[in-house]
Length: 244
Ligand SMILES: [Cu+2]
Image (cartoon, rainbow, N blue to C red; front, side):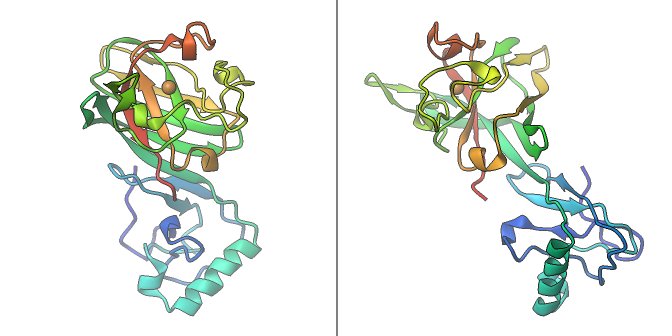
């Protein structure tokens, strides 16, 4: 993971801060579009943030973060419109903190999930420590809230996140093969050092997961409704995907 380069002389990559929406931040120097730059995503470590990074060459762009800090606003506008006009594809990536959860609420951070949209759907690069060795059900839950909430009169870990994301109302848990909950993801497997795994959900767009919870369950997932929700049992770790 690279931080934004400080020098404007030799390095590429104008950084586009999508948190600024359409007024994305651009590079310090004029952009000479000799070819269409391919935007590649990146994220700053340890934050739930959204950044976009271009592969523009040094001649195309120079370093800098925050166009509006370094160029007059009309120059940023022109540059942004130029990028749009040239058909630049904007890839997107989010970094989500994952925290331990219990019936007492949200605990310490135990990892991250890098969420990235690509041609094949949305990928989830999961890094988490301190979870038991073995399989763990992993889903997009409907609400972006990892807090404990009451279930059958008893405070339950992560229950504020609601059920699995199911915009079509299938009420069916079928796993990543599709046809059921849209938020059903491939099961994770923890080793001695925790989870280090990337899974992909072809049925999802990044917009589907924004503002929702990523939930890691105590046990595995058989991708059926018997037992309910794949039998993943309790919710043990959770993170909320930023809305934008
Ligand atoms: Cu779940």
